[in-house]
Image 1 (cartoon, rainbow, N blue to C red):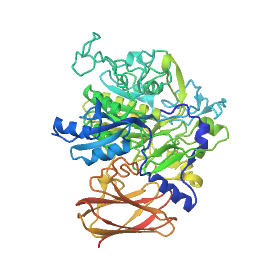
Image 2 (cartoon, helix red, strand yellow):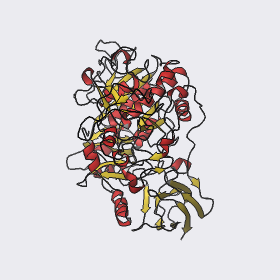
Image 3 (cartoon, one colour):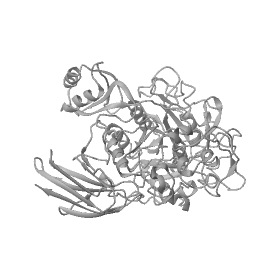
Length: 621
């Protein structure tokens, strides 16, 4: 996992979004990484899920054909398969997927923390919980680590914690699972709020029959042991997250957690297989809210299915990532040497599932998050920006800059990032669930989204992604709002996430062979159309856009459930084709033969800052 990346390195990162036409198109072409898997994976391992009712003999046959062996199991029948040294992951995936007995084969991703640059370290005030704009001053660090003058925030740029705590401080029966790199369960400011498995005794036996011996407070899925505390003193990310969500409050020590009476279930993971196991454990053990401040950049059918399995059990609160990228578009960040640092969209937050709350970071001025120390020491908001966003893919913002949290060994620190906006929102979800224990995850999500504050400052985005257009006005999350805990307690349960034509689940059926539409940045970047095509027939797809704009055309195969599903990662892509021109172009044409009968999806994408009308035509040849 990446650690200790300074703001200096972030400032040096080369965003692969250029202002001139040729560079922009080269950047987009570079994203089509046909053989590259985005992010790190466990070497020599893949995850394999066989189809239902496949016999043990057939499973053995498939594994033997690839000279592979099962070395472990995750949840939902997923096998962790070790490959021979001379068989690459890419080759193995191709061969496994070609066998009709295999339902899914994927790399075993190594999950990464939603990295946060440690630019602010000194503060005695938790402005995110209650911001009076006058007496609360907090320190910021410059990129070199030098302290700067204290600054006050904007009054009421907070989640109104004091107001909500007068009504509800949570409930000991409400459990927030923190799936991360470990949670220090004996931290003095966490210990009293650590979840206890009442069906288990510390006796060396598996009393509750769940396959885990003495899992009193959670589980370490990395080392397969009962204590979910980290083994590495540098792995403090999960402990920090836990403190933001539910540190002990009113104990004259350290920090106050967002949900003071909620319980924290610690679950330590490192890979995708472990994360899926942890999610299944959280579901089975009754977690109401699951916080996910780690993640990856590859679509995973296995991961998506695991989250969907908990649709009626838990609300998954996910950090949007911290590279100032738009999760509605396929973008990437490279350093000055051309090495890839990060991509968008970031998973699992972008999955179109009803039990996910995807969270961006805001600051003490109710703006989208940028590093305070950077901005106060000569930087501008654009170059100091951290939070990802996405009108169709990110739901809300929550305070995530200059956040104080718990560290290993009983300490505290101040950090920035969506990693800490997410547990603040998870704590709010815990409060709502405590007040309405019979409500479903979707109802809790709706209440939070329908009750956000909508400060004017959140209508502007400052980001290096936007270049000279930074400061553009628009709608950058689904709500254009920041979480308000007090209002959420009695928020409306009405649907806050209607389907949009920017995703597969809201695709518009083409009533004729020719349709017209409009795309605009940032509120309507993608339009998705659906039409049934027939196997063996040839078709020509033509998209004409507004002159001078840059629209791209994606063709997705039947069975696709998300746009950008495995785009160019070589991990089972549903991409039929991606068409673009070599300049800022407005005409795309693609001729192809349908390889299956079914509903194909045609996506028109407006590249950054582009807007206008288009016409789309599907003609049979």
